[in-house]
Length: 265
Length: 307
Image (cartoon, rainbow over all chains, first blue to last red):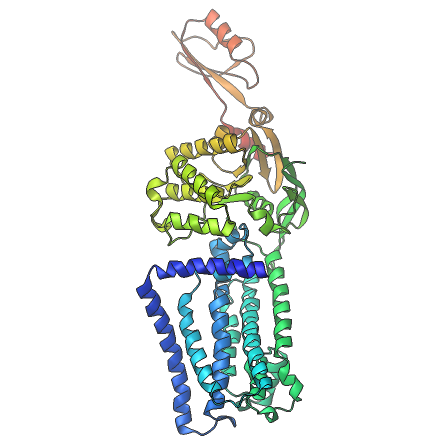
C-alpha cells in the first residue's frame, strides 16, 4: 500500500511537471474550475437570501455540509477521477500497455495525465468548509469526529469512483451510471438530508451509504444529534463504512482485472 | 527449466447469446533463454491471445504458464520489469510528449538505474537512428519512426524477454530491414530472448531458426524453418535456359514441371543437393544459363493451414 502511494506520487509529480510546461493554460483551467464551482455555491447564497433555513438547517450549517461533501468529492475527483476513463483505456489498448509495466494497475490508471486543474474545485470546497467551521462550537470530540468525517468522506467517494468504474471492465459504456452515484451523491450530500423523504435517507444509509460522507458525523459536529432517530454512536460509524467500502472496492477491482478480456487486435 | 513453459494452455471467450469462442486450446511449447522464435498463424489463430496470456494481461481458462519461473497473471507486476512488449499496432508512448520525455517517464516507471538508462538510451538512439526525433512529439512521428521509438521504449529497462506482436506491420522495405538487423544484434549481443508474431514471413526467414505455427488456437508445427519446408512437402526449382529448344530434360532426382521455348523448370526435393542435378544437366545439354529458386514459404504454410 505504501509502495503504491509512493509510485502514485512519483507518476503524478511527473505529470504535474508536464502541465507546468504550459503555465498559462494550467492557471486558466484551474481558475476556470474554481470559478465554475464557486458559482454553484453562489446559488446556495442566493437561496438563503430568500429563506431562513433549509430542512431545519441555517446557512452556516448548510455551508458546513456543502463544504465537507465538496472536499470529499473534490479529493476523490482529483486523485482517482481519471479512473472514469477506464473504458476508453480498454478500447485504445492503453490498459494492456499499463498491465505490462511494474506499477500497480490502478495507480497507473489514476495517475496518468494527473489533472492538476482540479485543484480549483478542491480550493473552493476547502474555503467554504473553513469558513463554515468558524461557526462551529468546537470541543475535542467534535474536532475528532470532524477529522474522521473528512477522511472517511474522501475514502467513500474514492471507493465509489473506483468500484463504479469497474463496470467498464464488463461493458465499456457505463460512465453515466457511475456519474449518477458520484456527482449525484455529491449533489445530495451538499444539503441537509432532512429535505428528502425518509425512504431516500434510508437508501443513502443502507444501500449506497453516502449519508456517512458528511451527514451523520456532521450532525454530531453541529450538535444536531436529534435530527435522526439513530443513537449517537451510529453518527461515529463513518470510518467503519469507509473501510468496508474500500475493502469491497478492492475486491471488485481485482475481479475486474482477472476477468478482463482485452480487445482483439 | 526453460525460460518460457506453456502446457495445456486454453483460453475461451464467452460471448452472451453466442457459442463460446475457444481462442487458444491445449497449446504447449517451451522456449529456452536466448532463442528467437517466430510465432505465426492466420488472423484469429490465437497469436495475440497467447502473447497476452504470456504477459499476464489475460488469465488462462485452463493450463499453465511459467515465465522466468512465475505465473504471469498472478505475478504480472513483478514480472513486468523482466519483459518488454511491443504491440505493433499500438504505441506505448505518450501521444503528446516528445519521445525523450516518454523515455524519461519510463525510466521512472521501471525505476531503471539512471546510469543504465542513459547508456541504453545512447545505444538505442544510435542503433535505431532516433537522434533527430528525441524532441519531436510522438503524434508527429511517422509509423516507422514511432515503431523504432516503441522498440527502444520496450528495451530501456534491460528485459530478458522481448515479445513483439506484428513489429513490422505497415513498414517499408528499408525500415523492415533495419529493424531486423537491430533485433538480430540485440539477440546476439545481449542474449535477449525474442518471441515475435508476424504475417511477414521474411521476418521469420531473416531472424528465427525456430517457428511455431498456430492455427485454430493450437500449434500445428513447432520446429526449424527448414523442417517446415519438408513438412509442407515443398520443392526447390532449377530453372534451365538451354541454347536451343529441346524436348523435356530427363535427369535423375528431378522432373520437369514446365517447358517454355528454350527455358525449362525442374523440380527436386528441398533436402536434396542441387549440385548433382546441375552437373547432370550440364553434362547432357547445351546450357546458356542456370538458377535455383527456393520454395515460397507462404505456399508451404498455406498448405499447412489447409490440413
